[in-house]
Image (cartoon, rainbow, N blue to C red; front, top):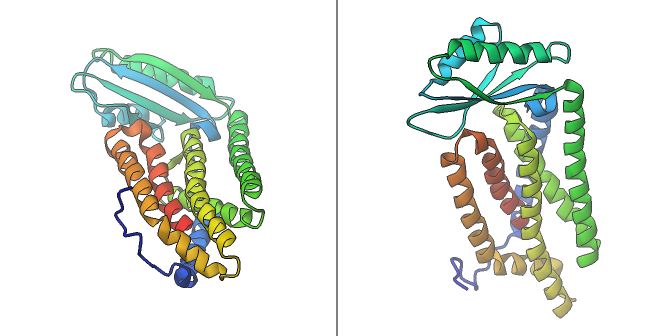
Length: 286
């Protein structure tokens, strides 16, 4: 196997724990403050509202759409471009509304688009409506999905290795997810069902790195049970360092490429994945 880090490297990871614990605590506390203090910017999926997909036969600037929505009293509508084309434009329009006027708002937006962009050939391709009650249920389901994923991983690690390994893995997973959520709260990035899917992917990715190191620690413990655990941890982290950096690096390159060039509709998803790769690799090693 090609090694970017020599197999003879001997970094004392354990000696850095006192610094990384402080760093992680600061990031965790800041993230929790942002999540519960400032709050997440929930998308239509979670807070209720309407999402309308519209396509034009000619190039239309997003600013023109925002001006139209502002003129009918919906200036807070989120306009997101889909893909890229030199001959036509396509957008996702998200607007918040309560259960009583949800249908009225959707109809008003659709009519405004059709009337204001007649010459551009406005084509309403899809309209999705989510009531506030359904949005609350989706939030609850998203949290449960992450909880059950973490619980299943804890049981798997306990059975696969030893239950003394499970708490560390679970704390690392919670650490990764909370910090990613903190970044989303800090920059007011919309939190949607896509992001829940990304966080579940981050959980799976992060635990994979952790399990590789755990497996090596267990092997060394079996060979030399009298050797201090600190030595086994350092040895295992060093032996897997090349593999960890290769895996993280190649995955991150693809994720960043999708983030920068994949279009606005998948931007937030791959931002969460990219953050998860960086934070997950850090937590697995330290």
